[in-house]
Image (tube, rainbow, N blue to C red; front, side, top):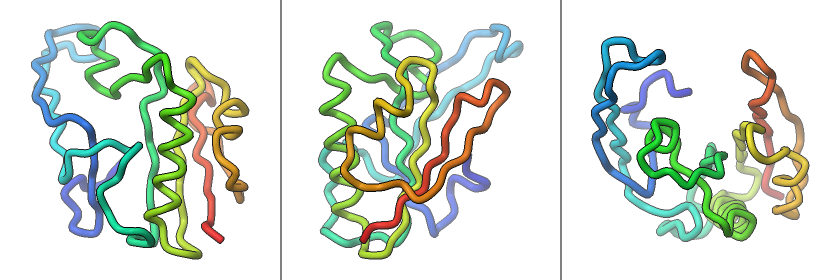
Length: 147
């Protein structure tokens, strides 16, 4: 989604820092190196930043209930565990904690496993607007403003 992952206005956080060699397949006919290289290694359920730190946050958590750690899709996007509701509830809470008042949170969710209506129940914050995208219109982009 980023135009430039190294843009100095962005801070990329992920729980993992890892390189994967992807064997040739339909998506990567020549194979490739998948590099997960965050600026900060951290967990979105416990963000190590002070309250009210950011004007804008993009929350793009894993959206797949996947138990295969070596699956390509898990390597690319991470995965949710069996406690996904609490995981995402805490993620929303943390994002809003580190977001400044009147700051914006953009939430990205793909409905491949869990409907967006079930996800939005995990926060008491009210979305302002949203947009569906992708070939199957399964990806939702939802904007919130912290009051």
